[in-house]
Image 1 (tube, rainbow, N blue to C red):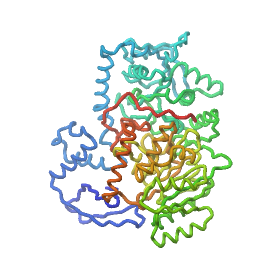
Image 2 (image 1 turned 90 degrees about the horizontal axis):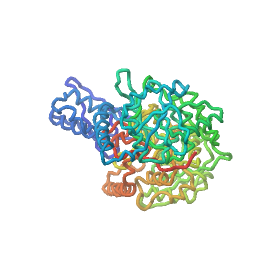
Image 3 (image 1 turned 90 degrees about the vertical axis):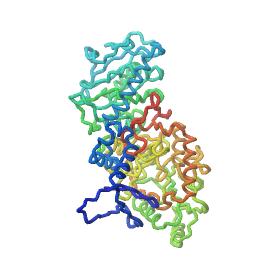
Image 4 (image 1 turned 135 degrees about the vertical axis):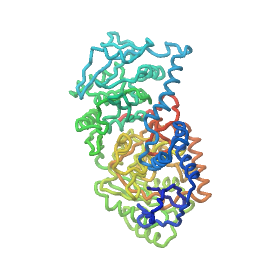
Length: 633
């Protein structure tokens, strides 16, 4: 049994103590000797009270828990098993894929079928969809002219027809489409209807991809892959980004011609990399429906040396001098270069007292400076009064590479950092909390190399708790009403959902505990909001403003640090702190509205309660979630 503790907050958990058990052992991990347990109470529970508490927790995470069986028919053993699954944090399987199909997909399909076949909808509202099936197998593609397989598509509306050759007349753009499909895989029965409906709502689309799952020899579906909206950096990292693509004929011809002229083999991965680079991001649409069922696939393997070479050659043709290698935990690692000379980085650290914590941070920066670009250190003191902290700042002031600033007064994270930026000389800014600890040489280089790409906004690393579990793997909008951290409490080396804990990818936001971005970009947006978001959510707000301007924020897991979270400031337990948090939370909700519940870097079919990418039974809204337009490269 494990329980995440926080300063000043009581945690409650039902535990089972056997009758003959005479000893209980409590182990406090990840404390570094800086934690004291001031209270512990064991309260016996009557069976009826125990069932009430477990039922309340289970219903919070699975609203249909009692609908599966009347509560009285669920045995105490099953309830106890499900209760512990819910609280396991990183591993959560109470809502399984079968439940999702039953409670989300099937009702939605029945509703959509009724709506789309309604007499009120004219057949002309959906375009005629002519599809050429492009069968491929083991990396060797060929067009299959015997289209007898089309019989199982079960399309009867007359809006769809399968053709085995391109029309001579190409005056009508995007009227013919190619659907690559691997031999043995299956399309969902409603796939073409859904794709046609999507095209009716997005007439400018040139490339569409949808969600997928696997299907076994008995026809049982499993292992779903729910995808984000268009995420180019994830495509570079993940050769299994999608196997379900619909590509317009003109884009297909352009892509094939480009690959042929470059002397490259035409594989599904190389084709989609090329196609996505030849169209505008607004022309790439994600359809959050499971339309493709894969068979005979190794769901644990994501890429090989060949896929890494494909990405490297593709990016080099686009003018990016990158090196790409296969990660040990699968997927591609794109190593973006630093320019020569390397840019100066201004590391900005706000602090107040807590000299021991700041010393750990500074010592780690010194110890692991090798391989990093040149840096200057700006420490902004928020009014330290403790003698050891004042002595520490006095010594630091004598260092040539350190600037000590003073800004006493009420704590305002945004104002402190904005003030420090005015005195920075670096082209790149690296905002660090004083309770952060670097773990390896060269930790800063990949963050800076990505931050100076013209398409990228803010970049954040993988952050760990003291015990080695994940504290931050990018930010998910909507968790807790505003935002939460992806893959929180997972072990650092776990793959995470679809290996996304280990893959570089675009996210809507990263935490300000370690955030790197270009100074000109920070200044262009006016910095952090020091008027309305003094303490909370200022980092999320800045990232969302970057995203709204067309920049892609990035999670970079090749850089790893420890974040001794909230040791310097603590949790908002005082009434004044809590009221401020509530005001700033309301600012975010009023400012960003529906975006907080429709994160483009996250699937609408995943949970907004937990941070572990577990399935959700929430209702879908709209056709899709679209990532804002962004610059290429």
